[in-house]
Length: 416
Image (cartoon, one colour):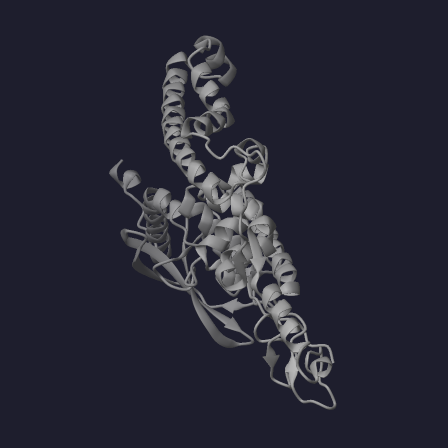
């Protein structure tokens, strides 16, 4: 019986196949242990993705690797050939010893680049930087940008894409707004660069609040361009308003915020929790956090009302025409007092009433002086006079170089 039970001796070929199979099984088992880390840390947006052993491409099998390589191409559509792989081991994304397969790509018969894979992990979606797929013509630079943002923010990729698209639309809107503002301001003040103006925090703040671009520019540069008009008390106007009066008007302006705070606790918690689809305990926790936030906001608002009331008394002395009841109906004024002082808000809303262009006064004085001088009719001109080489600005009255196209003092275009 022992003769028949004797184990048949393996051939060299069978032995090799067995060892190879065991090695593949061991590699697959090891990859399965490493799979979660490798899947989570695919840095597909990095320039070395797939081209460095520290940042390899994943594949689901050796056949999957071959399929991936057959799809790979350069931007003009040329595909690659490749050599058989070499097994190596390397540290990858915090894993100290990962088995990889290294291939050499050939383009037009010439060595191109080495490319690295970790098999038995999953299916790769991205090509290395600078390469494409023959059957997938997506904008891979954009796809990498989305993938990077998703990874950094801990978002799903479709959510990250939506946020980036919304951000791009907002930036495009902001760019159009800046260009429109630059054109608008340049009509009066040639040569301004809106990006330079926005570096000024005060201009940027007014620009964001949607103050008229020209008014924002003129207000920020009012010391150079304007002088304050003299203010006169209006007939029968009350100039002795007390701080309490202004406090009451401003309190009424923000009374809705206080109402929200009071109403906050007069709700049926059970009903509201059901509306939100959360447990009562969760709702109470959210409700308490919301109440604390509203309470803190109202405390800040009260301090702001006190400060604005004090400012209102001083503003009335400086600008007798100031009427807080009327101005509090102006939406821009209400927006502004949240960000700037009461005086700044008033001066911006009533800019033409508060300021007078310096150049208007200079031009008037210049015309008056020159009309009494010999040759006055030929010296104050908009262009070059054939009998007199002197050139004066038609707007501000100052003498300017004879070859000027614009007045260097006020920016007015020279008309010859």
